Image (cartoon, rainbow, N blue to C red):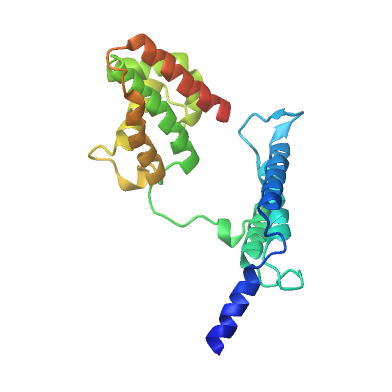
Length: 231
């Protein structure tokens, strides 16, 4: 009897009056449009990096979406114990508090000794730079030539360094060594696993480029241009 009751409660919790494929598609399209409006300016896509203000607005849009399509009871009333909504509201308030200098417990970094790695997003962006580096090497450049080529033509990549480096080419070589997981890379300064895995997947981009230097340079420029547009 208890099992039957719990099963009915589970079905009741996730039943929604909006369970209709066409309506669900329309609702998702509305969410996509609303998020586009948040991250656009004057009808055109905004130029990243996005600030906390835009991210907070986007999270609030998603929150309203969840409130609309979330679990309800048989009468269509919203169920009060929705942990996903409460968790998202907590994150929104915590990010909002940062503008007042208040750091919520969920945003406090873990205490670590010694040097820590750079932010995850910075490492993911560096992965694109190193992907272009790998393409150039397969096109016929030496590692040193490829690093110098990127440093000379893409000066903006200095923004991805931990601090202004007098030798960007050497810094790019260091990024590649860490992403490749070269021997001697310390765990605390190694890139996040997601970035390292993404870099391993860039090997596929080099197919058919061996010895084709001009093609490799064009491809590398497109990779770096896409990264610059996304930042």
